[in-house]
Length: 68
Image 1 (cartoon, helix red, strand yellow):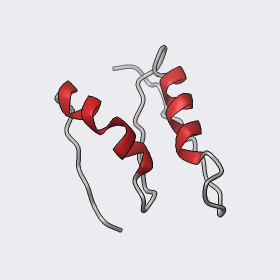
Image 2 (tube, rainbow, N blue to C red):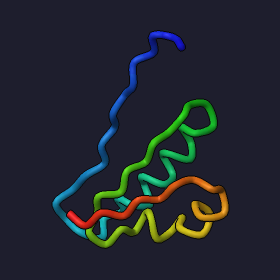
Image 3 (cartoon, rainbow, N blue to C red):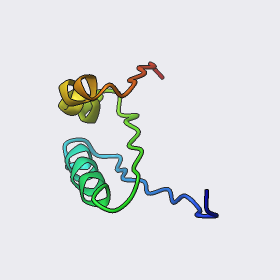
Image 4 (cartoon, helix red, strand yellow):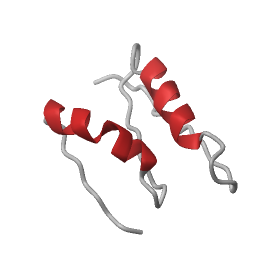
């Protein structure tokens, strides 16, 4: 493996319903065309996880749910 450093990008806001989950999904999808992506959903509503749940299950990727 190379010496590539990981980057952390955070999309956050104290306001609700401003498009954080939608922006996260779209940005991760764009970046995934060229890079390996790990998208972590820590929203208590789990909007991002809910949106992609079926695709995640079909892909065989492990899904871990933790309540914070």
